[in-house]
Amino acid sequence: MVRRRVLCAAAALVVVAAPASAQVDLSGSWNTRQHEDQPDRGPGVGLGDYTGMPITEGARLWAESWDAARLSEPEQQCRVHAAHYIYRGPLNLRIWEEKDPKTQEVLAIKHYISTYEQTRTIWMDGRPHPPEYAPHTWMGFSTGRWDGDRLIVETTHIKQGWHRRNGVPASDRTTMTEYFIRHGNYFTHIEVIRDPVYLTEPMVKSQQFELNLRALPERNWLWPCQAVVEVATREETDVAHYLPGRNPYLASSRKAANLPSDGAAGGAETLYPEWITDKATAAQNRSRSAGSATGPTVARVPTDEVRVWPVQSNVYMLVGPGGNSTVQIGDDGVLLVDTKLAGMSDTILAAIKTLTNKPIRYVVNTHDHDDHIGANEPIAKAGSTRTGGVVVGQIGSSAIDTAAIAAHENVLKRVSAPTGTTSPIPFAAWPTETYFGDHRDFMFNGEGIELVHVANAHTDGDSMVFFRRSDVISTGDVFVTTGYPVIDAARGGSVQGILKALNTIIKMAIPSGAQEGGTMIVPGHGRVSDEMDVVEYRGMVTIVRDRVQDMIDRGLSLEQVRAARPTLDFDARYGAEAGPWTTTMFVDAVYQDLMSARGRR
Image (cartoon, rainbow, N blue to C red; front, side, top):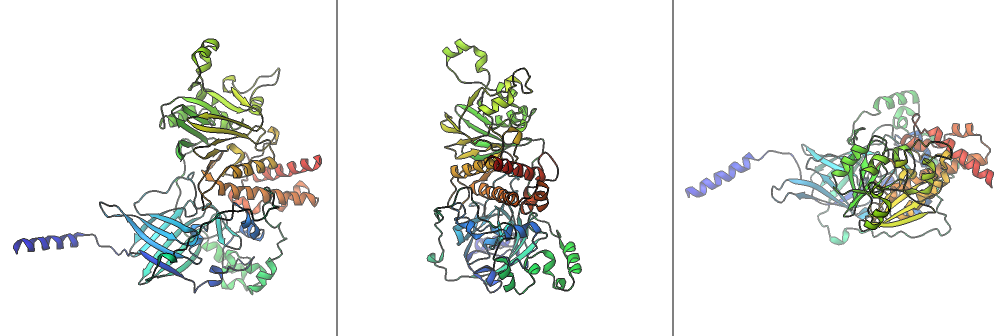
């Protein structure tokens, strides 16, 4: 009896000693209640109705140019609602906790969202958010913490999506803070959405969910999507959109909203009741509220460091000053795509040493710009070429004391000097293995390597490198995520070549069923991407090209094209007013290229 009392007392002490917490359990199957905002969340509001949204001028142009026929593109058919939108529609939501099997601490809270079969992970173990060059996904990267009985979630790394299904865009720089608050058999989900590209201030949305006590397996909807060709006559270079001012559906939809057209067109100032009678006061309210809340942060890369990011299989991306480098490692040694800026060799070699001690066998140059070939000479000298002993005896050992440098023949033409002049590029940095035509392939580290040349894109010597088994494409500067495409006309670049290169990447890449992942893509500058990121970028370039072409056809001069701002809806994401490649330079390059093509007809 005494022993039993002692054990009970000890157990009571354990319970009392446990930390008090107001956390609640969100686990269970939940149904969304759509009694609020039903037209928006169900059938969707009309085209051109952006009421209640603090959108920018660029977002408005993007939305007014939106043609829903774009969703019939094979690459768009299986796209998913991004995390900041997916909870708005009809769905079944299942929530559960994943715990450490030894400590029973909650490692993550999981959401299965029946719409598009998405499984979302909210990490609860204190891990940081990934760096800015990490891939983006539809659900993003989420971390959570408890504040009393409220679960607060911060999400970054979300793919480009929309804030409203009628074309209002959400950029890939959108972040979100969420609050999950349970009250009995209900919980409220509040989102604070920040988009520095397309929103002038945070946008707040809320949804209600009810616990489903009769959840059955057959109520978990499935979404086996398979893209098909829906429009047989569509050319690969076509992207459905309306030219500015030519969308025929805006007026009727805005009339149905019972608001003046500029009110239905959205903007932060229209959110205030006094806007209709006192627009100046509404504008002041907007300026006071803009940017009033801060959101989750993304780790920035120090400008003087090189970081290693695992892309897929045995392929890695080196991020740092200059363009991105891509590294493939294996038993045969190292293949390096692009060597960054001059002076970066020691840092690059040190980064590679963290992956393998094998020698560098190949350097591949995607083109001849300094930020991609600057460290060719010292990095090639740090490697060695594999060859047979008899050959060594014939050509001398010096031939194998350096890695081979492979590139398209136009790169060699650019870096070598015309007769009678001296090249600014050291001879040891020149390509030693060149190819002509549009393709070269070889086997290295047990993997097929394809060099794919696209003529007259960023330059006339661009090569994309396809690692077939790893399913990774290193694109060079024909695709970047940091700005508008650089069209180096002096080196043979053109906007039509850029579009051909982007369409080639889309043909080569195969995404997963949810239109993310699958083939991973290392851009010349920026973050790791997949096919959907290239599709969005291709859409931007195509729309700008079509707008400039229309202006040329209407007889507008270059100065008039600039004044018309054909890039307005993309400038906040890709534009630059200063630096080596500005928005004006991009527009000028597109204009000059299209004018030259017109003269050749």
